[in-house]
Image (cartoon, rainbow, N blue to C red):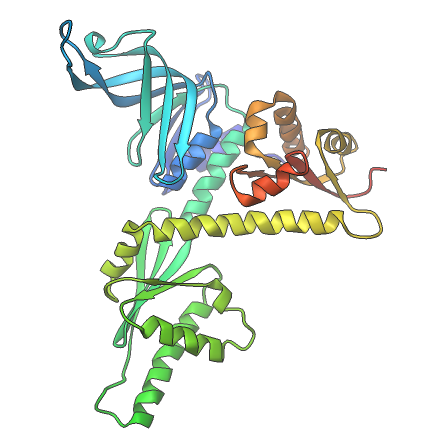
Length: 365
């Protein structure tokens, strides 16, 4: 069964990550993003004609020829141009001013650009589509789950932390009992026990783990994993980076460098790519595939109630009302809908199938 608007509203306001609330009577959503990922999701649900209100800065020129200076304003614009810069995480929304205050600093009808910033409230008023509300709900659910584990280590200790949507939580520290005063054999056994404890901690996580630290200790640990991960399940989940120390400050250092955001984005892309590869494999299989692609074939499958899961590029949904309606009807019929970013590799792969494809419950023809 599709999730009702009331249920989605309750889920939105009870979350610990991106703060959000929705007034169903007016269509006004109050959104406070907490991360670049939250901002990216907001961009995905915006469209031309949406009314966006936010605090901003606007240049005020008191006289002719005066260069003026920027003053704080509260401004409401009708969105025309929406740009998200993945490299910086900045979202800029440009449109004509509908209203604002103080009135002496705001000229109705002039163009203005609003910057969406983590930690700052914006309101978006529109006729919300069920898939847009669902996307916000899913984004918040993802943010509450651990994105990554990070282990900062050197030859004396390792700090283990989990990265969630609302920040970093230190889990524990693992200390090495190895001493340079020990004999070589005792020292090697102590190091192996230290590495083994870290490896056991890594095995407990099913998501990607960053191993970082100064010097060569992380490289030595990598060799240990290669020698002891007989099923080769752990190493593919590990990324090795450098940081200046094995403390929690070393982990924050990785975050400032953008390494955590980069790898988290790769993890999302990997999940979407696996789904597209599964579709390609099913489509090329012998004996008649339980798949359909392109708007005509997917539309026909929907008429027969045959769609189990829909894959669609979100840009296509935003630009094409026919595809938007098709996606909504799939959700209403109980199908799982996954929206892809066309700029990612998986989204470009899906473009080769018309930007829309489906796994079927049964053959239509």
